[in-house]
Each structure stands twice: as C-alpha cells, then as structure tokens.
Image (cartoon, rainbow, N blue to C red; front, side, top):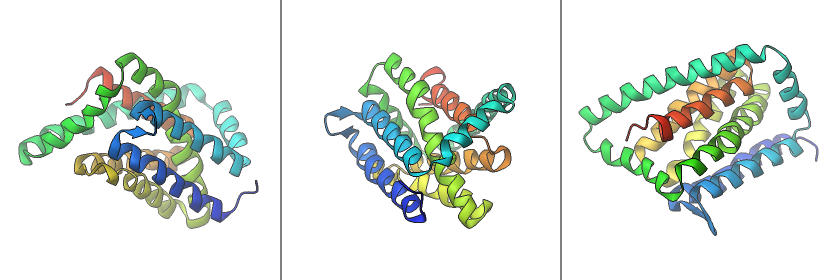
Length: 213
C-alpha cells in the first residue's frame, strides 16, 4: 500500500475507534482490557508499517545509532515523568478531593488481569507498540507535513482525545501530559526507541512497581 496523507488521517481514526470503546467498557469483544489493548496496539503497528514503507528503515537506523545512550535517556526520562506524576498526584488529591476517585478508577484496570500478565504485555507489546505508532509513525509523518511543533502537538492532542471515552478527567489529563512529554522527547532526540523505553518503564512504575493509587 502506498503511503498517503489520507492513510495518515485514517489510522488515528481507527485508533480512536479501537481505544475509545476499549477504555470506556474495558473490553474489546471477548477480550479483556489488557488483551484488547495489546491486540489493538499490535494491529496499529502492523498497519502503520504496511502503510509507510519507510518506517522499518527508520527504526533500523534508530537501532544502529547510539542505542545504549538512548536506553539510558529513556530510563532517565521515565523516572523524571514518574516524579512529575508523583507530585501531581499529591497536589491533585489535596486541591481536588474528587480526583482520588478518578485516580482509583484508573487503577481499576489492574483488576482485569494478573500482575504478571500485565507486566509482560506492557514490556513486549503495549509500551513499545504505542510509541512505534503514536510517535514513530503518526508524529513523524505529521511533523514532515505540518512542521515539528504542529505535528508534535497534534499527535499529543489526539493521544489524549482517544481517552475521552473513559469519562475520567484525570486519565485524559494524564494522557495529554504524557503525549506532550513523549512527543517533546521525540522532537528533541528523533528516536522512537528512546521514547519506547521511557513509555514502557513509566507504565511499569505507574501500574506495577510503585502505583500511585
């Protein structure tokens, strides 16, 4: 399939159609949230690779150049983002008592699977897959068409938008913060691998290692 601007517009719509109901109902057909999320992310990564033939070569080039440094920066950036959320969690609970309910609802997703399964799916599918799609494909293409800042902000905004189906303000705001943060890292370092490491480790910290709810 030849890459086109129409394809770039279509795939985020598909993402919204998959993630919106999944986040709202915590199911995708017979699949629970974590299996559904993994299947959706994997499907989007495959579709984006089919649509954009340059994605594979871009990722291979990313892998060959300064991999150790990118992993280190990914780990560091994940710790920084976790610190931001740790502080934000404390402030939001103190200033907006109702926020505790929304934060607790986010952690309700952990009830759908064992911690081991959640961890494995985050490491091998969800964390890296989301970044390959949202930053490695979507933001990269929008940046080429619209410019660095517009592509970055549009990708971050759409990343937050697909979480609206949850009806959870804290989740949507969290997604927006994450989208802006990882998007800025991608603008600065142009490395999907680095932001994939950051996203994956942050997910593990937030959901499994040091949960905030």
